[in-house]
Image 1 (cartoon, rainbow, N blue to C red):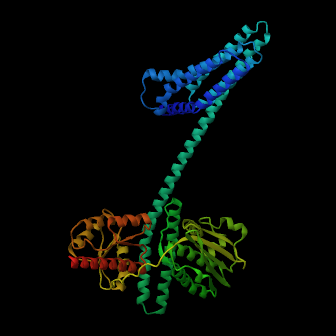
Image 2: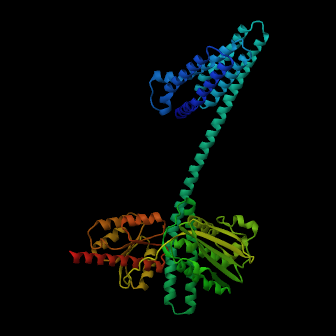
Image 3: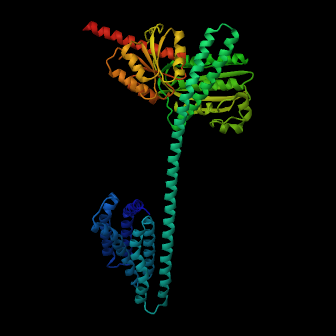
Length: 587
């Protein structure tokens, strides 16, 4: 056993003996009272006082070992703490000698029970420290070997006293075996806890490694996906032939599917690592849900399905919550309903009711598809699990959508459940807690992005070209930089209207480059900087804002999102300019 383990055992034994202080002193008081009532000895209360003083002495002697087991202690103090349990046990067991020498009936029996209980208490309390067990048990074992002599002297001519030898030896052997068994059990328990802790650390490291791997792969995959989507969109807008537009749309759909699968994988990885969170901001609930339904109406119509809606008029208009995550879950439910329904209706029912100071939103999606077998319901929300192989062959998918949707619903204070619909199809019920909110003040129309000079900073040539393809149709003049160092050189020499800054680049990253830009006195010190990254967590956005960035867009680049970010930062710049003009006029 190592020194650290031994010190730990001593500390546990000392703490255990201290914990038993009230029990020991209480038992001593009870014994003294019983003796006074039934035996009337003259030595009962003196014995109780002597034992109490010895126990208090032991607590004082072992106090330094309890406070800091590894700290250096004077030799005399350590020796005193070592022998203190022996003194305490000697004082307690002395009562058995007095009982065995008594002529009162059953007094020897009481003395034997006293020693047996004391030995068992020593084994239980000091099981983690072998030396403490031996020191505390030795006086009781010695008393067990002495009491036959005492009993024989007090009762001469009684041969039964010789049988006490066998009882004493049997008790000593039994206690020894019990002590070894208990020590082995405690060691096994400690080993099991250590193994469980080791496995927990290994599991946490594995999850962290997997999350890092997923983040790295997602960053690399978003680069070609961005290029695929940007190139397909440009091709679709420029080619006149219908067949070419169909091919471009096919590429766009495939790229969109790749992006959806990648987002599902990233969301699941964040949920598994406990890093997923939901935001709370004011949004138009009716508009958000209406936009989501409008997106799926053409898809339902192509399959000959009717998309019916009920209860929308009863919804509050403005609420506070995470609109993006709410739409993500509803999108998944509608996608599944349309995917698995060949004919009939898809019915969406909205309901909003007060829940204290909050609003409980309930969305029910019913379809007339094949439904869900009862046996499959328990594993419906299991990640990577599909109902059967035919579903995978016919519809594809990662098997993550419902698992992610349920976890998002729970993060929003609600849940997602599934059951068979009255129409024998499937019924999914989403609940979420929202907060009441007021309509935000109308913002002034932002400056047009046409004719802007924008610096695009990214270490990957495909990313730079993809962003350029997105910006060109908007009338934006894009200047490309392949590193943060090159970007800072350009920003010190030319004036730009905005900067699209990749976060993770070799050498200097985007946040560090922004901090250097803000700390300088060049012509672009106050230029709006938009973070462009594949990492889309709230923590990353907070770090971007702390570095001086004004907005963010996620890869793969969505032209609408990029346009909105540019309009947002330009509107902010215009507002700051107006405030500066007002202050100057006042001065």
